[in-house]
Length: 488
Ligand code: FRU
Image (cartoon, rainbow, N blue to C red; front, side, top):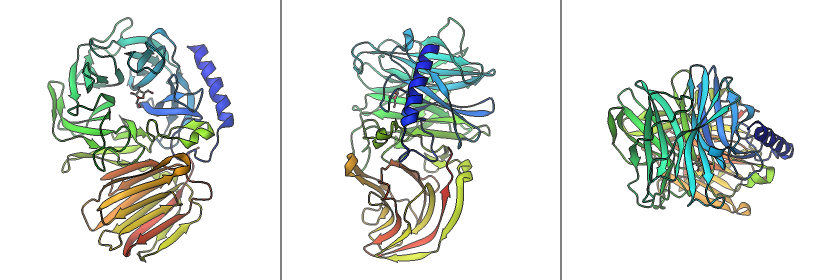
């Protein structure tokens, strides 16, 4: 593996030399160059936060998957580390696919899927996937130990292990596709985390399965407690859901199911699948526990098969901001807000005085830098449409006719356009917390009631920021903004 890692590092360094910065994030984790998709192995270990990610260091396109690696003291500022895993061993011949990390007795354990194309490269109808392990003493260099869990009979697509410890045992959930091409999550357990030469038993329970006949696979399952009362959430990324009106418009989705679980009982669902994020670009998030016991999650802020104009700059793929996840018992759903640590990036605070916009727009700035913009808007406003414009291509607005909050992007030069929206929350006002980076926008509504993550690709001279109202009056009740320091 050493040689393969060296080779990959040389390739990555050559790409870093060429990397462009127009779309490169100022305050989100991205690969130093090349391709990135899912967050992997997010963990607090030995005084540091570790983030790994699906990585192709040889180009800006997806390819044989490596694990990239970064570390952080505060989950905001990240330092790139050497590539952690390179594929090519017998058990991970075609790729080191997604997985998770465990910190145990001073060592860092990575659980990942060894992916093998049995037919042509890219032919999804003939693959072999098993769960593998790699171990590190220093948190930087990993020794692969091979396969620890083989697919149970009848399962070919079997990937993305998430491992945790509870009630005296080790547990693992794995995303799967059964013989009838239906998405599932399988649950495994083991008395020991790892013993040389020994595998986990592949006896399993089906923890959850789709009730939608179109859904053929559940990717990247994450299963975690959300109360002290056996409430658990499964967050996963189903593939195959069909568009339903305003819903499920992205190629694939990510959402949660909530229920009661303990090692002695099966997962007792209460509630339906709810999308975690309403934007254009959100997939395969993973959560972990912080040093002080918060549940924090980061996702991949892109979507499979979407055009990614940053490829012109020899990189693709960004994480979302780290988001704290909490359980809203009343609404029986998860909420997500940026972790409080993100506030250290704020500088140059400006206040927007309460004002009424009447069929007009006001310009806040000509050239929007990395920015956090907080706005409180009255929902009693009469305007048909009011909110924020970022250049000509991006608008975020309250649509008073459909009663929805909308994000609309229009970059025909890149073949990217379309709206995403969600019903307006109840109440007479709406609070928007908007994070604008070089090519991404994240909107947190009413402290995490709704979240939107969307990539946008504005030309350099098309980054002005306006507040606007059309077809009547709109009241801005309060507003403030900060430019954000770069984390790099
Ligand atoms: C999700 C996913 C995972 C897989 C990885 C491959 O985006 O398809 O299921 O492990 O990406 O890069």
